[in-house]
Amino acid sequence: MPANSWPDKDPYKELDPLHSLLSELSAEESDVETDPVFLSSRYQGRRRKAALVLTIVWSGTIVLHLVSWGTIFILGLTTILGLHALVVVSAQPGRSPKRMEEEDLPYVSVLVAAKNEEAVISKLVQNLCNLEYPNGRYEVWIVDDNSTDSTPQVLAELEQKYDHLKVLRRSPEAIGGKSGALNQVLSLTKGEIIAVFDADAQVTPDLLLEVIPLFQREKIGAVQVRKAIANAKENFWTKGQMTEMALDTWFQQQRATLGGIGELRGNGQFVRRAALTNCGGWNEETITDDLDLTIRLHLKKWDIDCVFHPAVQEEGVTNATALWHQRNRWAEGGYQRYLDYWDLILRNRMGTRKTWDLLMFVLIMYMLPTATVPDLLMAIARHRPPMLAPVTGLSVTMSMIGMFTGLKRIRQDKKFQAHTSLLLLLQMIRGNLYMLHWLVVMSSTTARMSIRPKRLKWVKTVHKGMEKA
Image 1 (cartoon, helix red, strand yellow):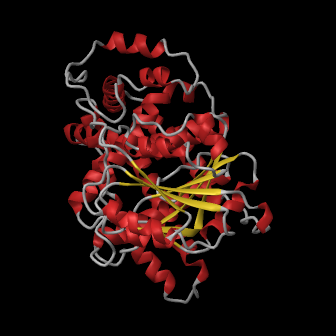
Image 2 (cartoon, rainbow, N blue to C red):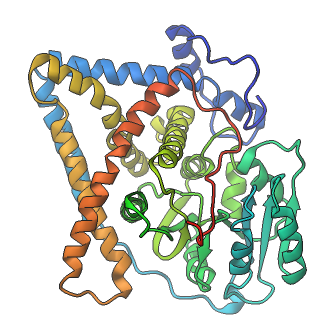
């Protein structure tokens, strides 16, 4: 199947027999390879796998309501998850390494895949072409993926202004979406470290000087910086995204500190070229290239670090409809990686610590929301409290702790006054109300994937420019 496209005869229209799926999965014994034919075969059958997961989770939840030991099982599971949560909360991130000497700094290639970004592309290029990094030690590549607005004209003018700006223009026949654009330009770059940004990104001038030293650890394959919402003050949705990103960065940083799974978030990700080559580049058959690359890096025994400072600013979506579409794509991309690499994960290819951390994360973030619907229906039918209430309570508690601590870390460079704690508390409460949308997104995404996954195509959030945001 061509990358990021959909065949005319949709193979997902009919449900294949369950025994066919089980035999297919049990036959997958190969390791992660870079051969396109092998990878393409691994990415097939996602709908059937999603249907199997949905069947297991829903039927398992119903069974727990019917058996006498269901409550004991849930309490035991909550205890295990609670102990893991205590370990995560107590982790103490290490100090950032000192800045490197100028002669030791590696060459860096900064990449941006852009499609119809006339509102933000000029500001982005000016920002990235004026970073504090030794002259001649970094380059900026903008991949114009067949834009139909004035993006090509703006880039042509900027090329004349900045010597280290380079533009690759893709043809209308080019495939692969963002992943295809990044793969195409990769062979033209010279950097030992590859930095990837979205077209609406804005960073501090010292970004490279602060992040690149983290790669002094040989096992570090990638680094993700915190995503900050530039228009956070606009409304409830953007304020919620600001607290969500604080929670997400805190959670990833705590997990990475314990030797668990740090994750990439697309905008503001730095990847070691050797690690990227080791994984075969960006996956052109997924709707979230960053989440897919996360799993493949860990399967290849690379670590991913996550940092609060410096951050990359981006536009937050400003209404519920845009948020719904964006988060559905993120949720499905998250599911896809587990459906694609489930056998390698269970065979402990990442190592025991990372595998355990990932399983705990999947239970809380994916399985629990999926089980919410049958749990509520059975609770209503049997006139009893929801069986999963203890696990849900633990999840909400973790969210509140992580959000408060994450917001506090963001303010580390500001004077911490008496009223600050109250402000953070109010932000935390509002943020957790906002986070309830994930319950609906996750549960509905799992069900929809079992019927028809999203089409593979160039999917992007529309950027309006901060003067309009």
